[in-house]
Image 1: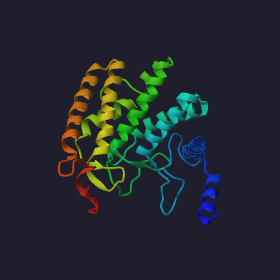
Image 2: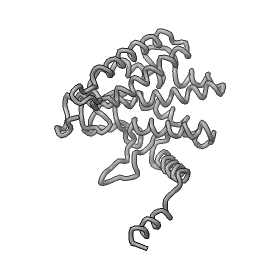
Image 3: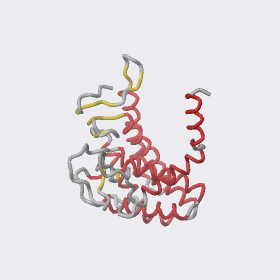
Image 4: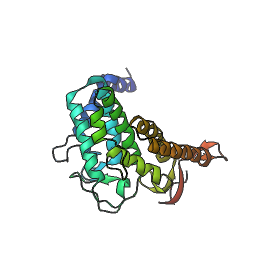
Length: 259
């Protein structure tokens, strides 16, 4: 038996099945969302505290993590995950009202829930859109479960200025999608295909959800902004020279990314 075959057999004996990998990833995700020294409802990007220090909560990462937990909870109805989701809603509501350098575009927070005050690539405007997408999904499941009152008192009401998390994120996205901001790698200030795509998704879903919640004027406004944003994406992110979508329209960056 040659060495390569021995190595392959050794690796395969330790390999997880897809189901095993799912639960291993799920376990680690939950651990990052329940660190004992982290404010409840926040998710640390990584347990690493040095070289690099990722022991912060990024709005983007937490929104995507909670969306993953939501997918799990929708099937399992695990009460521990349900508690995490409700705790996340409370945490996000508090920090939306906390002072930061870039309002809802603030990218990351200290683990005690306060805004990070050091220099950073800000704003990052995909965060509010991703949070709105996840919260709208949660709200619809709750409504289907007979909990519309909770949604109307904790997630969305049609008053302005906005007082609830989904409405705040949709208003922010609708009014700021044209503005340069940083992409997920936090290196380039500009308009970015990914950021604008999630903003488009949030406004499209938000228009439908606002109508469901009896907020027809906002529904029309979000729909009009989604239409304009969608047209902007179609027209501006296609590179005619090579026939593919480009990732960013950069106005200021670190200088070593060109497409």
